[in-house]
Image (cartoon, rainbow, N blue to C red; front, side, top):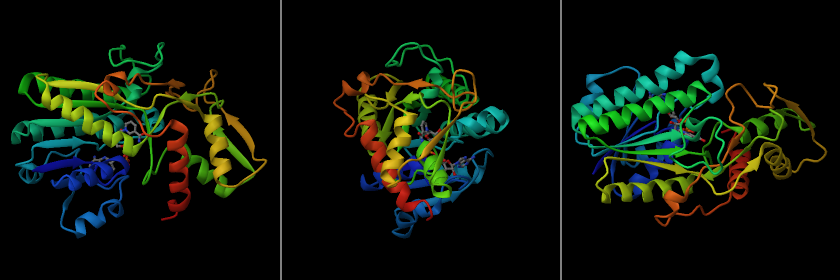
Length: 320
Ligand SMILES: NC(=O)c1ccc[n+]([C@@H]2O[C@H](COP(=O)([O-])OP(=O)(O)OC[C@H]3O[C@@H](n4cnc5c(N)ncnc54)[C@H](O)[C@@H]3O)[C@@H](O)[C@H]2O)c1
């Protein structure tokens, strides 16, 4: 019962680690701590339940290969998750997302690790024209981040077909909750702490997207994985998101309310003529999650409820 979590010191990865420890797994975390933090999993390391290997997955490493031997599943969550940066630094995103995925798959192939769970993203769909957007909708990303996730998916399904690695590809909507360190909430709270009178909103505020609490994600991952293991399919793709969506302006209102502020002036800063927050920003995102819901999964919190909980956590923990 040994599992590997890449990016296990990060926001979502650390929740995956906790879930696996609770299931009785011996967990090996591989993380270079570039955006993750030791603090997220320190309690589990201290208890001897998790082993942390501080390694950069961009570099193929025989020592690391040895250390991963005997694992049954790799939960591949390491990546550079900053969509905005991917436009200005495409090579970074290729290396940190695609090359890293390739190395992870090589560790699987060489060590006979038979199963991979991959953190993909709604950004693979780009500017979809159908909402909610189903899994079979053609993928046409508009950011290098989205492209890097799609390339990774292709590598994974290739390894699945060619080498028989069973794979679960999860296309996440925007995920929020304890330990998050990036995204719209963090941006708004940081700005309002600096200046509680004015809030700069990237984009025209009408961007509308779906938000899912990280606990609902873990539950969705568990449901999808049980399904994959019971089916004869080599791989499966699942959207994992909420059934509703919310605008950026509404999120700003929520943050302002939760911070107990009044009369905050919103200053909109669109990066494109059609009001995107940055080049490569998908303006509308609502995933069709009926495939996952047909297996009995259901998000417990709406987008607004999940955001409110996350705002409260970020407000109380940002400095730490
Ligand atoms: N947060 C979201 O809303 C969201 C949405 C869709 C997909 N995802 C995907 O989910 C995964 C986790 O995202 P997150 O929000 O928890 O981000 P995060 O930045 O908190 O976690 C990423 C982790 O990967 C580690 N890492 C990065 N590059 C590495 C490398 N070269 N070698 C070893 N470790 C490395 C970081 O240190 C960090 O701990 C990512 O793959 C991300 O693309 C996240």
